[in-house]
Length: 494
Image (cartoon, rainbow, N blue to C red; front, side, top):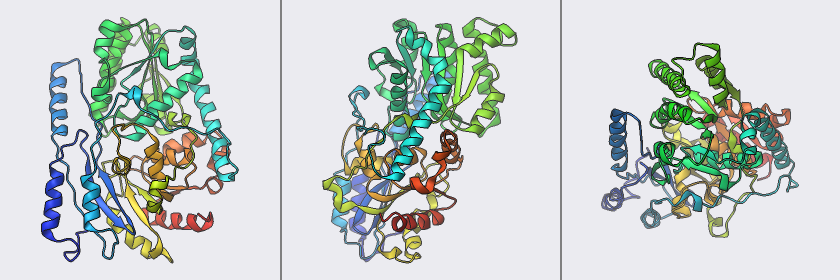
């Protein structure tokens, strides 16, 4: 982190600001920093973990979960304030921006208002029309793969159960949940016929815990879906271990389970092998079998448990790992959102930037150490001194558009729309930029999740791969991304 110039920020002022900020205790383990460039001061969230209320069937897991949650909720808000020389944004203005920031409390997920979509092909822009053609093909591919396993249940007019939907500020997971609802509507499920229960990532906002639902309130459902996303494995294990434990009670209660498109990733072979054994044994016990070795047991298991994967490498690994289940290759379900128009609000026109850097700073990032070098990279480009930029992450939106609704809302698109071009290393910042017609350059994560996920989606139609027309590109490094983004501004006359 670049240290502030002592001539620009006096120590007493900085101490007073930091002392005020440390008083805030966040619900979601958020840490913020300020990067100032040109006329803009924005908050960049470092380190987002999904809030969780962990409920396991074993007492030991429950105690560990409670301790983990308590530790997360007691984390204090930290802040450092690097201020660039000659910035027209004063120290007082920065402090005011921070002090007026309110940590969102969250609202009933049913009251959350998702962004309003536009009609497909409601544009004359050839690049955006190309994107819309691609979106149609991606959705068709998803329905081709999943409908045979879902449509029959929709015709029975029984409620569907969504297990542990994401009710937390990571917009990507919220997009997946909203995309799943749109997908299910296309198949025949309306809002009234969808029920939910919570384990981990639904946090305190689940109306009922899944173990209670299965014991007491099952209203005749026989079909359940597990929310898709990037937490299948040990990368975000506090969520996945609840999924592992859920198969036995779901099978015992006569559910067929479809896990929506996910990424498979384990760092530990020991954990992976243990989870596979628990999943296999849980399915067998729930179906009333001693194991899944017999052909009858294998066939019943494959009919009742369907895993879908949004990356080819995940699909291939899972096919080997879970031969007792049905495994499908399906595009990320967030492509069932939108499309959207860019959102340039009159109140934020003065914050319009050339480049929005949408960068994560958690363990999935490979470029978090480069944040402070962005100004230098731009200065090295011809005309780069005049380019205005800001660094954001999902929770920056709460400072610019305060709200207790922390799910996928208009503010997510508004924040991306601040830039003529977006540079990002978050998968769903890439997808939302694509859905919103915003030019973007992406840099992959440590798991190569963005490239692998977009490849599966864009394999739905050759035209999807035309990044030049559709105004998107991949960069290997942050330096290359800066060069490509600056080139986009001139090439597309942005």
